[in-house]
Structures are given as C-alpha cells and as structure tokens.
Length: 160
Image (cartoon, rainbow, N blue to C red):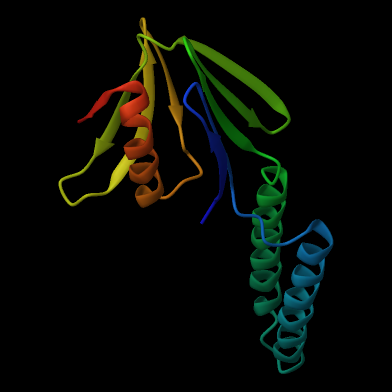
C-alpha cells in the first residue's frame, strides 16, 4: 500500500506517490534490537550446549536483516509526482536524495499501461515525442490501473 495524494481541477491535475513507511528510524532500531536480542539469546543457548556454528548463522541473519532495514530507511523519503497543467506534463522523481524532472508536451503525451493477460499491470509509462518516463513504481497493480483510468480522459492512452 502506498500513500497516494492528489488534487484535480479542469486545468490542473496532480498526484504524488510515496512508498508506505510505517516505521520511523527510531522504531526500526527498536524492532531490530528486539530481533537481535532474541536471535542472539537462542544462539548463545546453542553455543553453550556445543552447537557453536549456530552463532555464525545468527550473525549472518542479523547482518542481512540489518542491511534490509537500512535499505528501506534509505528509500523512506522517495516519491514520484505527476503534475498536469493545460499544455504540459511534469513528472518529478525523488530517489535517494536525487531529483529528476521530466517535462513532456501535454498535447502529445500518451499513457501506456502494460498489463498481463491475468490483469496484473507491470508498469505505467508516459510517452511524448520520443521521450518516456515510468510512473508508479511504488504502486500496486490495482493502484496503477486505477490511476490509468483517472488519467486516460485527461491524456488519452492505450493498454498493451
């Protein structure tokens, strides 16, 4: 589930998509600490009964989990924003502290939604004059489809 917020009027449409980040950095640290404490406690019990290799596997598990939490925290501030005004379409992508802005001609911009036969929509792309930009990477398939239905009357488009 992602946070989708937007506004619409006859000449202006805006939608912002963010990944769902339910834990704050402090909450993440608390959760990781509890998991590490439990894992290392069980590992030490096994070490005392002679199964010392368990400690290495617990360490590998905690390193992997720590990396995963770190990766999620790095991307907590990511977002994508789509702004449509009369004759222009602007897609702003903020990822890992870097911003990318793609401006497209509103009249020539077309929406392309790639859906599988079972209904799963893999990606949503905006194309104009040889330039294309993917939008909705943080969205589920159903959310992409819903957004495409909202954008189709504004932009026009087709599904592949």
